[in-house]
Length: 606
Image (cartoon, rainbow, N blue to C red; front, side, top):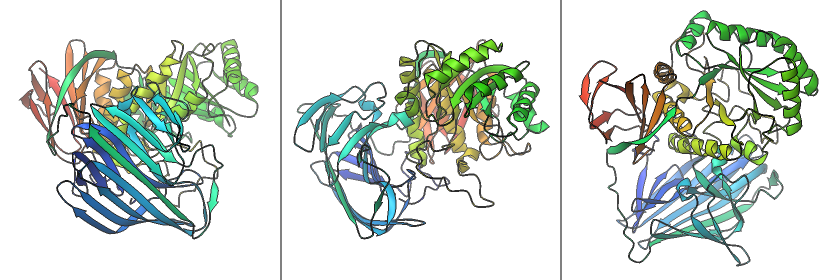
């Protein structure tokens, strides 16, 4: 489990550093210690299985694999290796053995040793059940042998669906599946709370104290066994491995394209004239500005943000972060609000993961008394999990809000692509308790902006290094494709508005100072042409490889396709035949459309 390398192909199509494994009728992919996409035929039964070392701040300490050995037959395999995890004072190593047998049984075991004492929150296995299991019945066996019948949650569960798990059994697509957990106490959480597309069964219950110190020499041993078999007489479709073409078909449901905004830099740095010109060309619905009352100069930064919004031809989403005296902060903001081009106001309280009702009521009363008529929203500045677990009263709100990033638990390209449908699930679950109010996502970033669950100070970046929340994929074609798919997912879920990224810099749409634009800038340029129009998602038979959507406005339409893989693919579009023109003006017929690796392709219908 080496540190993720965003430059290498790591998407769901098999690449040179991925191994396809077979255990009788069961197939899986092995990559850097991660056993993923476990299927019987074409039915996914497990999304992934891996072992993680999590420090006192829940940071994942990557491992380096050595001494890798493999024995592989047509319907069986054995993999062994050593994974070593080191960072600062942290030292942990473990021996892995993964086996697959002809009867469809997979076993993954770890035998680890603490090399140096350190504080940890978790060490051990995590098994990911795909979110496609939502609503399916299951049976859990507890450590005392008792059994509990339940179901995988449909709406996102705010808390653990199952505790004290020794075994789980379920049936999907005519396949009986079971998993046995050994060596620790396991429980399940709904990872869609963090837009992971899975339910995670993990070791070390959260009800136990953390962090705890593990002493040098401590051994940690665990094993998970997965069994899968067809029910009698059940037909199972077998997919052909390595098929290059992916079929997509129109979903038949058009959704209004919501207002799309961007974020001003947290420090209040002014945009240059070239930057403002490029942002203005994207027809942004708003610019989000942070108003942190605990920091000196907030009023000057707010005034500068308002001027930037006016110059860009748009309005402000003011994110208020109330400090020790919320009433004074709200009155101070209200006194300066006259003339601000406010699109909306977000209300957060320092020290609260989800804003409590008393501050929401206080904000509504004082802001309305100050003559501010803009919609007032609240919820959390962090993950959907915080909103789901601390649901605010909605009577004093015009909308709910939470942020999204795809890298809370995993960091490789494939895992980022997996989060796309879970973003929609989070919005749909929020709408279920929003009382008819809108749900906005603000902001969407590629990396976590801050850690709301840290139990100690975050490490400072070294001089000359980019900020810790910057991701090099911000500047790549992969980042553009991920962004396009995110917009489509959130739009189809009925999101009221979405804020993406900063305007410029390593977390933005272009180089600072008006330098080169990043590939994802073109995504928003295309969307700007259809502002006020509609989006229709394409249903893909393999959305982890190829996804797409259609934008329509005033009688014209364009088709957008994304290849999320580091390998070429072909998109086969079902539906009415048509003639399209590429961005370069070439005419092509619908049908098999070739896609370069990590391509973002626009086709305009004639």
